[in-house]
Length: 447
Image (cartoon, rainbow, N blue to C red; front, side):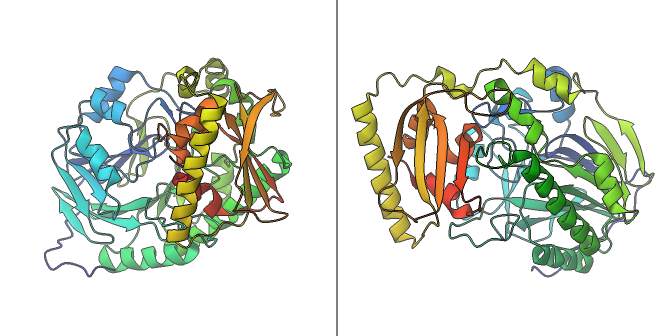
């Protein structure tokens, strides 16, 4: 961890105190000392149209709110955190952008491609001063919330600690920190800034599990995921000991023909989270444009969403199409697709060998012209083809990906990122055991 710099000055608390406005997902505005930091702005769709932000706001009202910021923090390059279309529409490309100094420069290159001139790359756990804010970026220290071993490099996610007006806020974002990681973060905050005034934590599964897994009891698994996440949430609160808390992350709806899957998204409601806190921190429900003033411990509206009922939003967007629906794969015959997969699989095998990565499941793909589910979440389409890994086989351990042929082609040809397009896949895992390396390794499956 970085030592506290000699020029770090903790300013006296201003009368107004730090203010935090939460819109949706990890989309926040943090204001301290008159400086405004916009975090992970996302509105609309992500992941090939498989996720839609919720609540929804009038675009012009949203742009006016965003453009008032002094800088933009992007935690990582996933589409529900880095939204180039929104950044352009809101006129933010002339603002400074703050990111971690990643080894992989993909996020930096994509931000620069927007026309952004100033990108501040910050080393992990290094206190940086920007106008009247002090902040430190927390790196990803493990690949998954279950703290399972994973052989794929996981330098992707980040969290951010912001200090202003004598107050400290920790925004976890999607960073899958372990309890040991949280203990280290708490020690850093205490040594650097003192008490932790507010924390924003993602609780529950911001992932396709269990809603997109067709070979399990989704009702039981949803309850189990929520129970595990609440247990971990309680342990995190014990470690961090914040004065205040509000929930974030994973808030979205599934539009289109996968809309019936919304019922199994494993997210505890606010009342359950507040009950789990048991008065160890004061809880606030900010989502939807509410602002928390950390001095007054009061909430006020910053901007009002146009749609506040989640069930109504799901019904409204049940007829939405997905990005790949308009992707033309008619020029790729079945034989050409065989060749495309063979080349991609050869690249996959070579990369796995070079990096000495192994997977713990056999992998297969079942393809459809238009994959759909019925009201019970079961596949209602007929397969049109399929592929299987020939050399990476683990008897008795199967992972089957069900997805559209067009989506499969997009992944193989790099027209879409595997991590994102899997939001529109259905999974069959036998037995039902989580092996994170398998899904991450598909990023190697490109021609």
